[in-house]
Length: 275
Image 1 (cartoon, rainbow, N blue to C red):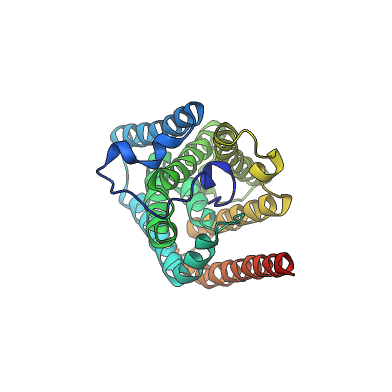
Image 2 (cartoon, helix red, strand yellow):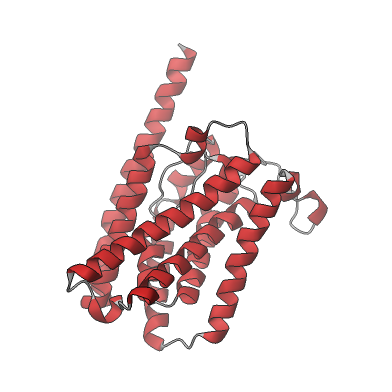
């Protein structure tokens, strides 16, 4: 989930981006001290857990193939809608769900946390490069967003480990397995959202909480997106992996419809403002 108009994900409007090697001029350092610490803590925690997990966790060829397939589908998804997303990002208004969680949550359910976090990092880095960077989104903001999703993947992994459910072999044959996936969905949503909200509140203490937290419609859309990701994970574990490719057109159509609706709403608000 990318939040472009809430708090931590919309702290500055740096269209004049400094070169990355000029560390002292990074927009990151303009954050309030508490927000700076929060951003760095999230980033370091996500990277540290992922690197340690990759070192300590043996990975199978099947797990790598699943992560690779989901990453490839996410990249195709991004490329199809990159132009539309660049327009939306450049307007710098309240964000909406970009449906990335379909792929990241499916990965979190199917492969070890370190691998799903790595896949999420690649997916979101590609999205930032194609859609956020051209719109002037600073690198630290994209890195923070990637890190919250990576930590959410570890939250899902913890739920699955404690429950003893392996989605790869079990699918959802029992009501217990369904409940575990539902709890994993709530864990992903909670971790990802709260990390963004806390950072936003620290960075912009004067911003109304409702503007930082987002609307109920946005949270409902994110939950529905995660539900689609859960369905994708079950399809991948139960049927041929290539059947999952049939969901890509559905995600593209839904994403495009939501994006156009947001753009139309923004145009209507501007028209009313002029009038």
